[in-house]
Image (cartoon, rainbow, N blue to C red; front, side, top):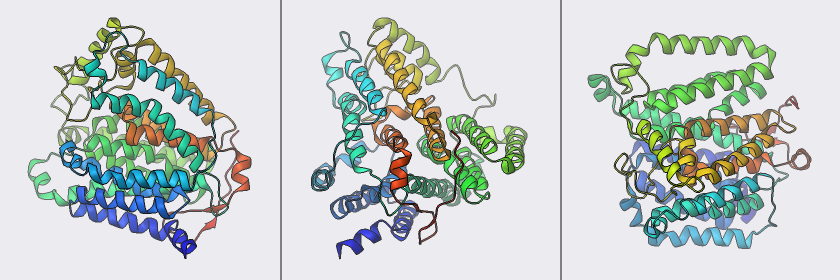
Length: 460
């Protein structure tokens, strides 16, 4: 009986049921209830299934629809006592289904970052700031907490005979990306009359959903290479959804990622070079021609400028250098609150610089610069060593997260963004012999049965 339950939990039918549930949550505007239901469902899966991949899609979907709950710390903290259920489920899963700890090359970068965030602000930050609840969440979450996440997830995600584990993750990313598009387009449908009257779109959760969509955007391009070229249009759909959120970071950085995705396709497959170039040129012409109307619609000022010298991010660039000068080795620390006159975060959020590079400079100093550079070089090595289409796709997913982090907190948010980034590199660490020893079945979106995996050229 338990084998049948586990088989269903790992099937595409179950994945589509989670997708349907997430869509209903959005349509009913029941994100709080939906989050509780999804957390309980994930907890049940952790108890029943030894394969932790079954929790990946519901986790992604929940992370996406909960972005609509802005400034909701007080809302969710009321349910803290229920936290014993998911915590108990996690403990049970990693103890009862325990596997041998393994360490890959990306772990050392995580350790380097853990050292820098733990020592951030040393000798200058006040104890009240460093040991505040918010500060400890980010220090521990990005530091030793992320190292623990790596060790647990590295042991839990193993090659299985039933399926290709990397293809499975890409399928989940594809489905989650479609759900992100649904969130954006359904918002337009519900708010159509207001949007038509004001000719403005205001989506508070635009940056967060754009970050997730940028993480998933390369996957349709991978499917265009390995399955059907029509997936190129799905990749464009992902970017269209990003543009329609009104996120300036998504519009700009997502555009850079879109170019990288088309270049990826053009280099990997000669027959797709002309279609890729044509679609990219068409998108560029469309954006340029419609910019005067698009800019005010998504909330960009009359000057049609993406960046204003009067906005918070611009001011915080100079604050980052001031904070670096105050403590060049260790920075001000993630718990520093001295910039609250420029940016006052919602409850439970850190005092962000909203820019990855300047966050490192201001919060972590030279030690942080060295740690993150060490991690970045190690990640690049993983992507390009003995590379293939799958590894390059994961690399483009990382590029999307990194690009968006340049103008938003991004990777400085432990859950879900940095956790998902760590997960990407755990999958990149799988060796080809390991994968060949496992299954060759493909977990392909919208096909209930497993199908034979398409041959992929080796780009090494």
